Length: 132
Image 1 (cartoon, rainbow, N blue to C red):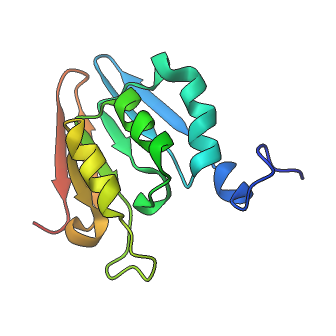
Image 2: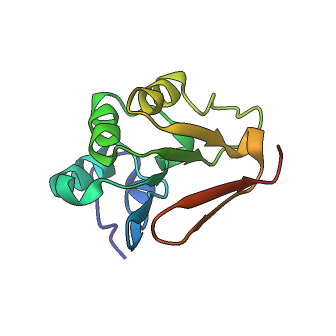
Image 3: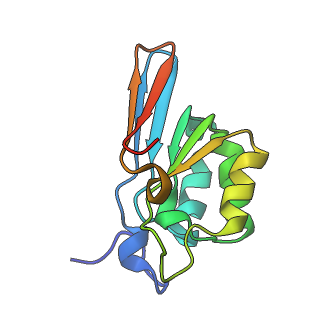
């Protein structure tokens, strides 16, 4: 089958499922492995992107200014970057961590925290990590 997005070197990643889950006042957006082209597509829906929690796209790789706009649109309080320790690709990129902190997000990586579990009652949310 033909990818949903095509014409870049990251077609498979850009065709990742993006899911937003909302329960009362708390929302989470999970961005799979989307990269620049996928992020550009999401920015078309800017008003719907704001979320309490962001699962950062593509292991925290830096996609340039489009990603800065994306972080501003999502404006997360909390961000999770799924990345292995000593990533051979240098993930997460320092620009990603700094960009998330600039919009006020508390940033966790699975490399440092292990599994990250988020629970909510719809008004508050709680974060637990495997590694303290």
